[in-house]
Length: 247
Image 1 (cartoon, rainbow, N blue to C red):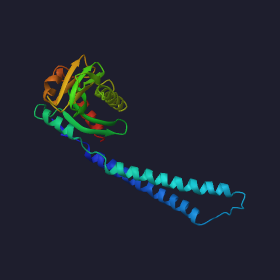
Image 2: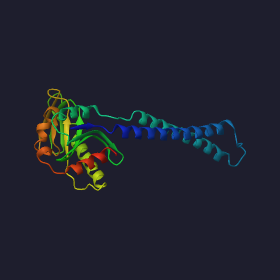
Image 3: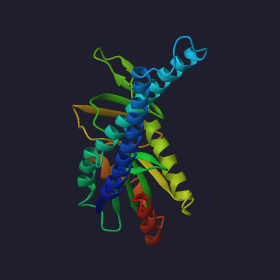
Image 4: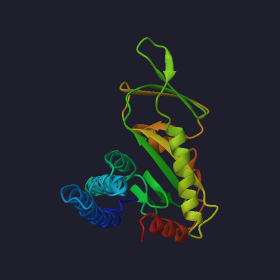
């Protein structure tokens, strides 16, 4: 199995965002300087009938400059902290890597403007498998799309997470993304993987909308659904991988 991440594409996008951040920041500095200048140098006197308008304009210009400057700073922070890999996806890939052959490609940290962010996607002859990967401790019960978590007293409470809903959203985004690239009606599956094992994490499921599994049982659990049969040819596999990598 090929185990890759679109690091080059993500680095390119990070650099592009950093360039935009510098431009926005420069505009913010320029506008802020103008605003400060309007406070330092008085261009209207109180007796001027437009003096109130002048006061409003100089305050608005200064506020706008500070806002634009903060936006530029926020973009720069986002660019510098752009996540270029996913440690949980790397851990998941290591489980499948020795088992699946080179017809399969495991793409970590999928991030496309048209998709958003997806933990990982496995592409191979059975189709496309979208991963939602968590490292969440606790005792969880999943029925259909609903999740509960056992409290300290043994009572069942809302889990505070819903990886099923997140997985379904990711599946739909990947389907839409591929359909827009002349790859419609592809078999796209999903799976929710918990990397923490018992007793740290315990899972109970009844008719889950999206299959759930601890990492140690991932491959056996995939054999009954995603890996049950081959559904697409290798040319389609190559095209899907190329698009998901942003090539």
